[in-house]
Structure formats: structure tokens, C-alpha cells
Image (cartoon, rainbow, N blue to C red; front, side):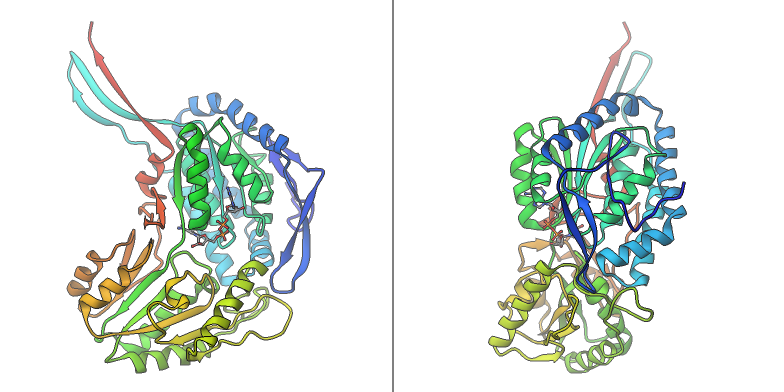
Length: 474
Ligand code: NAD
């Protein structure tokens, strides 16, 4: 079926298109132009979506898991069939460069196909003629999924695929800043999934709050900021919803003095600035051993000068704009503060007066450990370089954060680096690589970076209850 990805955005409720009496606008962050009007779901429409998901649940959960797996794999096929449109629309609404859009849409297809291969575990404790004791996994019911604006398609798939394989139905709400790809995903899946299995509703933060409070929703799977995560935890308590929260981060990278400076500088650049640093697991604090600090800083700046920051839809663009005005203003304020505090920029720092939410790649030279650029999650291309000379001290500084999402260690001495990694308080610690994710590798935050796991069998199990069956022969 031919679908126009660039107009006529509707929600998907009970397998049917739904518009709403009120609407909001979506913008292209590279031009600040309005690119679409989007339905703003009413509370009644949210009720309809939840009711539809609840109605669809008994039949969906009763289907053999192999059938659910096959349909989740078909979601991947449907995305692939529309991949070019998805990539163009993703760049248009999110701002990311073509390569980033390819990574996200390609990843979404892989995730559907790989999660579709995962089976729910059964733990058999006793098995004799007289008695069996086993713990199996059963679906929860209606899952509410809420996603952010940095990777709107991939992070939605991280929720849809395991939730549906496990036998749940879903009401999905994208960020109001990036609703378009998600609405089109709902539209193309009307032909793939039975009505009600995946409902997609668009709206603002109120809509998210209604979903998290809803008594018929059994679980909330949320990716977004720690501040919103706290609110969700509170409102989910009404009916003791299960929650998976993937929240903010302020990831440290520790660079030991034995690295190859030039090669590592390039890797660290992408570790920090991928997706214009609008990345939960971007390296956000770069701790560099003092023996190579100056050399590495220079190599990083040299490499950064080769990077083109422009409209993501233009050929040759490496990094696009900041996705929205709210985040752009936050970064402007952060830079103004850093300047007022007298911090030294090795690169960037000045926001040009032009159309589009463009922030230049900014590298800050060894700011105080308690300055805002170090303590806060910038969620934009402002990177502090920090000097260290003592291992225990740098590990303590790396851990001195309310966050604990991920980290990376860079050294030729792999055994020593691994020992450092083991002392870092974070859900993922990479050594000499970064940002390698897999549908089969558990991902989740420590401390205030989240609760629970996405991906892997652990992630699949988050969409289930454990049920122990104890059966004795009569
Ligand atoms: P956000 O918390 O502002 O919004 C995320 C989503 O929550 C949006 O859909 C929003 O409409 C909704 N929302 C807002 N208030 C709500 C409420 N009271 N109840 C229910 N829903 C509500 O986050 P954002 O600015 O879109 O995303 C950026 C943040 O996400 C960063 O902190 C980043 O680190 C984090 N993030 C984390 C991961 C991860 O896997 N840990 C991945 C990507 C982004």
C-alpha cells in the first residue's frame, strides 16, 4: 500500500485512523518551519486507545508465541519497505544527518527481527512423574510506552518488539517534538497487526500523564529525562504498575596515557558528539590523563574542525541542529553561564544568529568539577575536558554523579582498563569501544539513570509477570 509520509498524520486507535478536534504543529529544527499539523489526543481518545488495547489483549496473548514473533518480524519488514521515507522524515522532524537516520532505521529493522527470535524462559525446578515445579512468564496486559525526541523510531521499537512478543498490547505516545515517524509507523502497521494490538496516540505531556495514571494500564515503559521518570514512578503507583525507566546520563570517559592519541581522539569525538550529543549515552565528561591532555585536546579540536554542522538533509552534513527550541535555549543558557564563569573554550561556544537550532561543537578546557558543564547533562554539543593524574581520584570523580547510565575506558592495557571498568557505577561500561548495542545485550541505568532493563531476555521478561506452577499428580 502506498502511504504518503509527508502529509496527513493520523493516530492509530483500534486499527483505524483517528484525528482530533485540536492539533499541534511539528517543526523542522534546521529551518524552524512548520512541517505538519498533528492530532492532539483528547482524554476520551486516550480512553478509547486503552480500551481497544485491553480488548485486543485476550486474543493476542492467547496466540502461539511463534505467531507473535512472526508478526514482530513483519514489523521489521514493513519498516524496511518504507525505509527511504522513514529516513527522510526522521531527518526532517528530528534534524539528524542522513547517516544517523540510516543507523536508526537500519537498527529498528534489525531489532524487530532479532527480538522476534527471543523466547520467554521457563525455569523448571523439579520434574518428576509425581510433581513438577516450574516458573514461566506470562504477559501483563496493556503497556503504555512513552518515548523521547532523540531516537524516536528506534526507542519505540525497543519497546514495541519485546512487549508484543511477550503477549502484551500497547498504547504508544511519542514525544510531541517528534511525533511524525511514530504516527506513520502506526499507519503502516494497521495492515500488519490485529486492531488494538498497537495504538499510537499523539499529544503533549498531559497525555503522557493520563496514560501513566490509567488504571487499566499495567505497565509503563518510558525513555526520557530523570525529572519525568520521577513523576511517572509516582503516578504509576496508583495501581502498582510495573515500570521500566530509561533516563538521563552524564557518562564519563576515562582516557589513560597509553592510548594512540590521534586514533582515540577521533573515536572520542563521535563518542561525545554523535546525534549532536542528544544521546543518553554520549560521553559527557572526558577525563584525560595529564600526560596526554594537551595533545589529545589538540587532536580532538583538529578533528572537530573537519566536521560539518548543517541541515541534516544536506549532503555532506555530519551533525544536524538541536531538535527543539526548549533544548536549544537550555544550551544557550549553559554556554552563557560557562562564559560568565570565565571558562575557556578550545572550540565553539558562540551561537550564530541564524535560522535553525544550531549549536556549534563546543569543547571546554578543564572547567571546575562542580561547574554546570560538568555536573549537568547538557544533551547537546558542549563537552568538558577534564585533567586527572591519579586513578583513585578519577574513578571517584567519574562516580560522583546522580546518574549511572554508561561509561567508557580507553587504554592499551586491557586488563587494567577492565579493572577500572569494574569500579564504575554504571549500567554499561565499554572498554576501547563505545555505543555498541545489541538486541541480545542488556541495557539499563544505575542510580538515577533508570530502573530495569531493555533488550536481551532480561528486557523481554520486563514485559511479563513470573508465574510459578506447582503440579502434583493426584
Ligand atoms: P522528557 O522526559 O522531557 O520527555 C520524554 C517523554 O515523556 C515525552 O514523550 C513527553 O511528552 C513525556 N512526558 C513529559 N512529561 C510527562 C509526564 N508528566 N507524564 C508522562 N509523560 C510525560 O525527555 P526528552 O527531553 O524527550 O528526552 C531527553 C532525555 O531522555 C534525556 O535526559 C536523555 O538522557 C533521556 N534518554 C534516555 C535514554 C535511555 O535509554 N536511558 C535514551 C534516550 C534519551
